[in-house]
Length: 299
Ligand code: CAA
Image: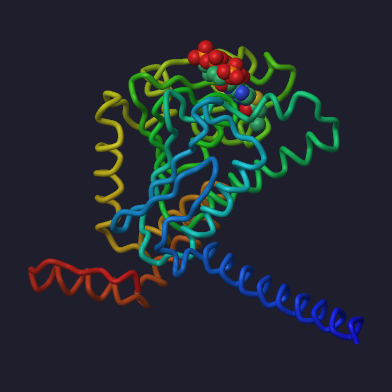
């Protein structure tokens, strides 16, 4: 009898645990989806906030100069998914907490990696940065401080870079015995030209914000205390335009830059045509003709 009761209790507790697990998993999935994308998710190494149509993603490991370890990369990956699913986010700002934007990939984590592990870490970083680059919303890097190695590469995965006058940029990897691993050998050359990219990468030289502006690595340099205000204004200016059109512009520029001009302009014609299937094109042009303010719906 006692055995029967115990067995039944065990069964009940297993069933109870299963139900709890299902509820927990469902809650976690809802959390990851951001309950429709609007809730602020809880992370350990990053902060994701939303204000109106703009998301602000802050890398938040100031004690380690926001160095990117695997955990932080995975959190960034989840945040990108959340932002991608939130149809009310039209523009994204990426910045760092404290005196660094991001001082690179985490050297402590990388120090003892073997070839296979090193490749895996590089693949993870590249996967996340490529996802950010392909995110169908414009991303502005507000570079508040050190943007070195993986940090410079993270900024290069954004559409626009605005720097504080205190920012410092560089690819110091060869000084550590490695190559840039999160896209630096590819994107830096595309942004500042092959010769300048090779010079920066081969010398591991750290440059200041003014030099970054001179070589076209950043679009603008502003005083540190004005950086977020400046970037938020820029994000809101972008967000006030038709979101679908901005998204298609990003896709056209990113695709077109990688192929020959005939293919590129054919792609542009495609996306141009697509605009005429949107409500926002009707709204934008009707508002112009009727000389009234426009209200875009991201449709
Ligand atoms: N990884 C791990 N920890 C880092 C780090 C990094 N990339 N950058 C800084 N930190 C840690 C420091 O070890 C230190 O930790 P402790 O307090 O526990 O000692 C803390 O952050 C503060 O750093 P510092 O004391 O060095 O601060 P500083 O103001 O004197 O110097 C700095 C700042 C110039 C950014 C300096 O920290 C530095 O040179 N960091 C390394 C930059 C670098 O080489 N980045 C490239 C990494 S490799 C890479 O990114 C590969 C890739 O492409 C994927």
